[in-house]
Image 1: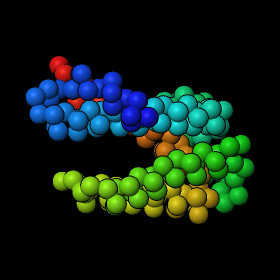
Image 2 (image 1 turned 90 degrees about the horizontal axis):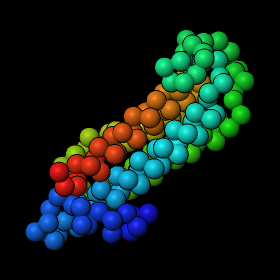
Image 3 (image 1 turned 45 degrees about the vertical axis):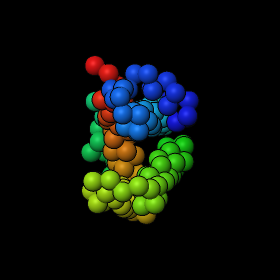
Image 4 (image 1 turned 180 degrees about the vertical axis):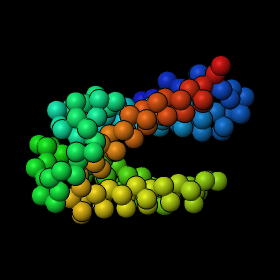
Length: 160
């Protein structure tokens, strides 16, 4: 995906004189588009899994109440496909941590490492404590926000 989007962004990159910086900005924009598409898919999938559940609030497109997510605890009847949704979205964050640790170190290395570790901790805690309902609603909310975040990052690398 990066290679496909990279060639699209080269002519529109902010930096037109410094070729090395232009390549870097184009690669960052291409990666942001890839991540935006991933989060669009994850959001659509999350909505499909959660839309009819009793705990998804109207502000997220449901008809339920978030406070009801603990009603059946510790043995709730999970939505069909919820486990797969949780594990795949957690896998995205595990992959992000691995690539972050072994990739090039940037100025925000410590902050982003902490972010990835906390995300994995929260996903693992949600899974192990069997509170998938509230955890999946929170993950769904963050997936929605990440769509816009990545589109803005992509636009920040292109010309005015």
